[in-house]
Length: 187
Ligand code: AMP
Image 1 (cartoon, helix red, strand yellow):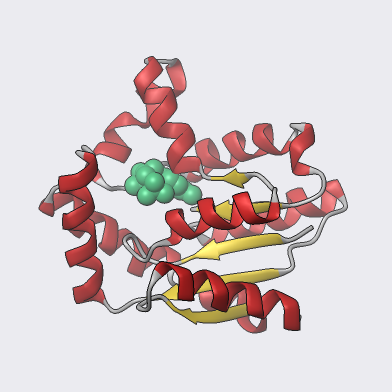
Image 2 (image 1 turned 180 degrees about the vertical axis):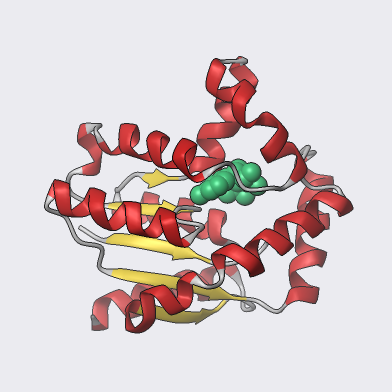
């Protein structure tokens, strides 16, 4: 079963592809952003801790995210395959993931990076804001999210080096899904 790290800037279609691939491959999509939104909605202690970061488009501190992911990986559905969507987002998170996978005797197959130029990203995020009414999709927050991505997440492409497969994220949803699947078949 595939074990995939899905990467790409906000608005690259990462979440949507993650959902499609999760259904196709019957593996869980693990997305800290979704976990945080659910916790914020419940008003849990974790939710209260991460709300200000999430609402402003800033990254939640590494130790909080890593802790959440460790807990998630302790659940039995992560044993045979998964799609990581939105984790890791910093080099320390990637190092923590390496440690965690070594402990679990697991390896990721591929890092898939959805490549979309910035003007297209902003357009897509604004459109999604209208459709979904997400609190973190105002123009100021979008700016912060992109800033965080370029400063802290994009360097991960170098961290993962030859493990990274670049996928053009501009074509239709179906074409992008197809391109990702092709990469895994060839692998
Ligand atoms: P997302 O739905 O993946 O865009 O995540 C929404 C928000 O959750 C982000 O803007 C961050 O505040 C927080 N978040 C999600 N994943 C991470 C992560 N790996 N590291 C730090 N913060 C995260």
